[in-house]
Image (cartoon, rainbow over all chains, first blue to last red; front, side):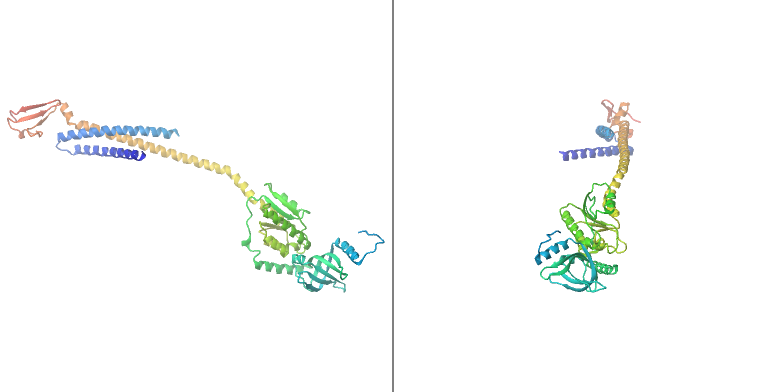
Length: 76
Length: 377
């Protein structure tokens, strides 16, 4: 169903964008801490690791799609 | 005509015999009208006489011929008649049967020309808005002209080789006697036009005096041209008085050659356009190349942009990974550092918050230890 597919792609794009935003927020959090809260730091590290992993996977997919499109365009 | 020498005629036979001879005569007769009467039938009965003596001749012109001549006869007019004599059997009187009548002298002709021109102008017969365009790429042409003389050759030689189909009707074109043949030719061409056999009618003749061009100033012929079902080109040579037929035609040219060029014009233009085709194709080719160049450039830029965006995102993730690795508390533990918590579970950062005898928890890279405080500094 194209509508559903489009909606899924839209959600993926949205989450990729959100992941980048969340990671940036976590980095900012670390920079802003004068007195490090180890538990929260650990949570943040775990969360960031998860986001980075997911986003890198998605980025890999995007890169592959781009390579395919590029090859297709350059074939003409 | 031969007859037996001893033959005895009756009066009727003799008159019939004479009339047969008269009919073969093509006589031109001039004189001044001294009596005139138009019957209810439209036939005109008149008498002409010589200026210098008293000789007279009774004349008749039948209604159709009179109307076709386009001349309004009046007593005192000097006229030139063409026709033949005839004896009217019941009275035995000799009359002249006129087939055409024309005015004599440039002055009279000019006067008649001016009057008719004024009348037809007032009717709007020469109005520009009545003129029709020539159809493009004409192929079927009707021509009325005399096959004698150079006119038809000039026309055909200048027509160009565009596959024209030319239907020529040979007609007398000289003087008043040309009226009837030209009228017949126009009627014939009208039938051809109505059948779609001609797309344009061309009437041509060489130049001449007002007298020799009389037929082209004839009212009936001018009207026939004006009402013709397809456009008419009149190529009639003239000195100063434009023939009225030319004024009524859709196109007026000064020579037969110009009429021929007019017919070839749309073909010539089409040929000229065809000559431009290679140049146009070359321009289109250049434009396509330019657009292709623009597209290649745009494609290159787009690919470069996406490539950079992906690389930038990668850098960001790598940086985040490195950053997290450095800030991961577990890394500190792995290096030998430990985290000490009090009985309330809070991290102990100062000896001041514990007392001797308190139990504290020490988190190591692997496992935890619980100890009792024996002393502090």
